[in-house]
Amino acid sequence: MPSIRSVSNPRESGENDALQAAAAMRKGKVVDLTASLALTASRLSLAHHLPMADSIILATAEEFNASIWTQDSHLKDMAHVRYLPKAMLPKRPPVEHE
Image (cartoon, rainbow, N blue to C red; front, side, top):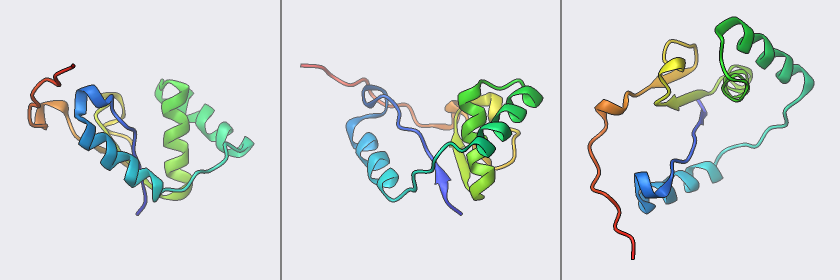
């Protein structure tokens, strides 16, 4: 099953993680926001009280039978969502700036 993933701020997750995420996204598929997809997103937004951006992501996942990996707790019980709480992630050392 394909997945939808967002890239974190490189200062938070480290440059290596950001590069890995970017490489994974190159394997992904870019899709148009069609009128049908926008309508589905609007319905999801109203039904679940979600921000429109999250609704568009969720509608896209539903349309393409993709998984969404997220740390956003407001999406954790939604279909197509794989939720990983931030507390479960290992602590990262702070990034040093020159």
